[in-house]
Image 1: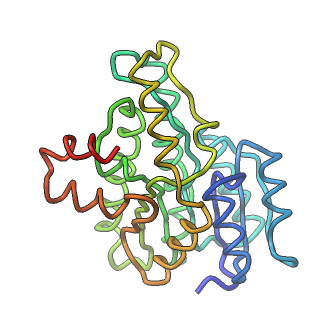
Image 2: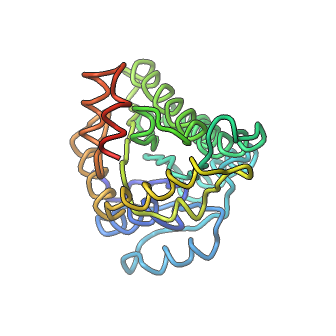
Amino acid sequence: MFESKVVVITGAGSGIGRALAVQLAAIGARLALSDINERGLQETLEQLAPGTDARAYRVDASVRDEVFAHADEVLNDFGAVHYVINNAGATLVGSVANTDIAEYEWLLNINLYGVLYGTKAFLPSMLRQDEGCIVNISSIFGLFAYPCQSAYNMSKFAVRGLTECLWQELRGTGVRAVCVHPGGIKTNIERAGRRVKQAGGMEGVFADKAERLLVTPPEKCAAEIIDGLRKRKQRILTGHLSRTTYWLTRLLPNTYPTILRWIG
């Protein structure tokens, strides 16, 4: 399914993106890997199976012109794109009261607009070739809201909405869309993220909980994403508490926050 297919992965310099690159390389994929962190990208390249056809690109996913230029460059280098995994992301810890508008904009530019840019930049070529798959990384925080994560919640709910629209719009085109909801993955997103400038006690409580909840290795998450793609799933749940929270919010949409306080 992936042998000789061209896979674009954003945020490939660490975490889930790196794990996906390593595992896809092992099964014969050709890789276009991007990240804002060039050192991380180089480390990812060094971990790929010998002989992998892979190229690294320094791209800021939050900058529209860079993403669209990246799409042109990848198509020129590889001739086609079969999978786009919009994985680049960051987090922002802050209550609504303590989060500045500029801080919201920073987070949304990466997590929401980065996914939108990646989708819009590569979708036309997929539609022309009647083949392709857009994989958008949402989160379990795209399924439920959580204190001090309003900016992250906004971005991941929006990614989910975008992807579910694509499910319907792409029927019959040969192109499909997949929404991934990782939960509790132990990556470096906390280092790529921020705590708001006006952080107080509430933000500290969330940070302590996050340390306990981020337990699933990114390698396990990547394997489950690849398995879900093989099975042609539209929604992939992976990682700590992902399935629990999915069903919790479906069954108790108005009262789940009370139970989440107990779980967390």
